Length: 454
View 1 (cartoon, rainbow, N blue to C red):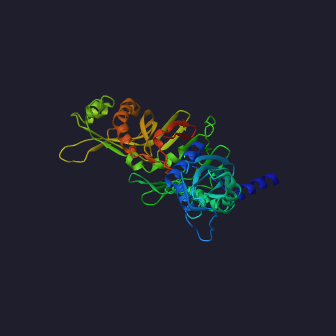
View 2: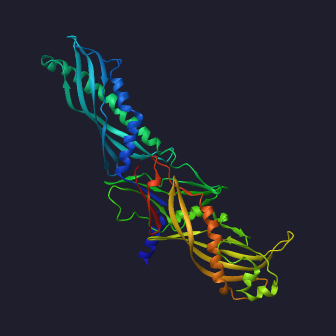
């Protein structure tokens, strides 16, 4: 009894934590690209090198050298490695040529090769909640120094140059390059948690659940997406007990985005009202004419009530939130609602209800990506249940309508659903990610987007 009481108390004291609705895993391929792009976009090393040639307050001139300039900055070679629990270790290898005039009147050139190293700690910005990198422990390491100065000048002038300029000045000039590059990288997270519209029905916002974690092979970002209706109500993610995990066969160092079935279900709840459809066309695809005469072939009572053919009007209403389920290789959308069929009347008179049926059916989902949106296309899987709620034509066996209703759903209702789904579901906006190259796979309880570079 005491043990049971203890377990109960421990359960109360342990804070509940909902599983994330989406997971992002960033491999070294994407991080290498982003840091390299930031270095190229900022032109920061060239800017820093230009500063090195300027006279600075408190900087003593070097004896024997005048008109000091820096040129020919080499294209940097960037090497990154993950630091578990910390972030990324960065080494930037570059070089430059320092020119001037020696006291002998000749042109002087000193070719310097150096490494800039720093730890880029991965944090969560307290104000914005966004991921951010912050550099620390920056060092400038001289790899080699070559000069065209006469050998008798080497010991004194070059050593003086190294002591007075390179060792003292370069760290202050070059280390800010790391910070400036991270500013560019951090800016590419700026839109991550901005609300993104789902048509006119609501918005989706990707919110971090905690500080991103770093392992030896990747950075993982956990999201608790906020799905909000246009009027402001938030749709809660169901199925919080379902574990969301990356596939075990994922290539080491690769990058993936996982979207849980619960998250996609919440997003589709925004579109539920748009799934309500009225169909009054008598000619639909390959279906027989949508008239009471055709319906009478399944329900003889219709012919008695309507000896002359009348056009049919069909109204489908989805009265429960759509639900997405996923099993390896297959995803279904479960729809519960009603199907009401009417006989149309002329001269603007309201149609007459024939019957109202409760229906439950599944549609298969095929996923694709267009730009920054997840697209869905559906096809009928099967009609699971059909039951009569009311009827104005008397009792009949609704099971006789199974084939008729199944064909109607496939030919008339599914195209209407696919039109609604063209709005697309927004994907997280980070690091200028191009989702068009992503490879999609359906896993247990989640859709996997294997992210690829251009």
